Image (tube, rainbow, N blue to C red; front, top):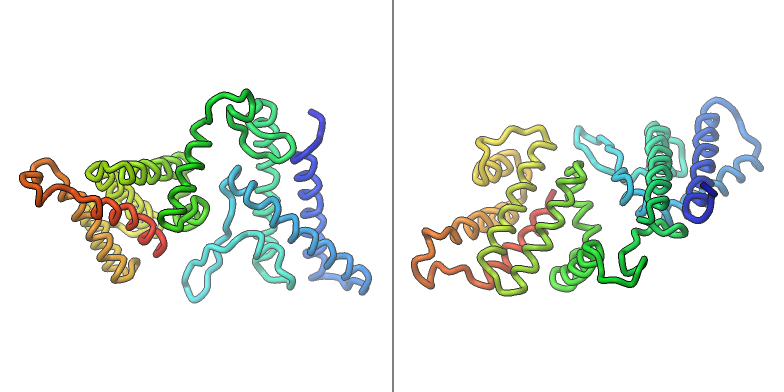
Length: 287
């Protein structure tokens, strides 16, 4: 296929990254002239600018976004571009640059297929909706975008910021399900369906805690909501206030069981639904 638009731009970006990686390797075993060093610095500035332009699209396509840095026996997920394009040579830079190169290469391959199939825009790489293609009704992607816009208005949380907080969920399918269930819990709460909103929100929190413990390689006391909460508390993975929120979310979900709905006192309230949905974001913020 003819190289144009976003594909051509990313291939140029990839070649520049390769050159920069080679320069960084050579800097440890040879001396460059001041003019050559200035050229390398100019290349780095160009790459920093381009990474700001392309990294979100690349992360969306490939899921490659962070590299783990360990300090004082603690793991810190860090943006690959921030590490890979550091101004001074560091031990982790070549590794992070490899991640950068891999992510761009994978993005190009996926874009080629998606553009050929008419799924993405040739110039920008953005996903095309049916409305973009034929003027028909918006697709699920457009609907999801609208939902997250409303979530941002209500709770001050964007899909991207929430996604970064649950970066430990690597499986694309599981991430998609979590995003979908968060949207549905919000829609149900906003529409006045408090009971199903609380049930769904509790389910999201339970699954996030389970996956977080799995990511930390910690075995829960038992495979239940209570077990996940207790294990997180015992290992100091949740702040006290957040633990109480998780406990409340579990209580909300238990409260809406049919056998408990004997009087209006046991009926799930609007405020309980709002609290349960809000707890998803508060708890995720502590991961």
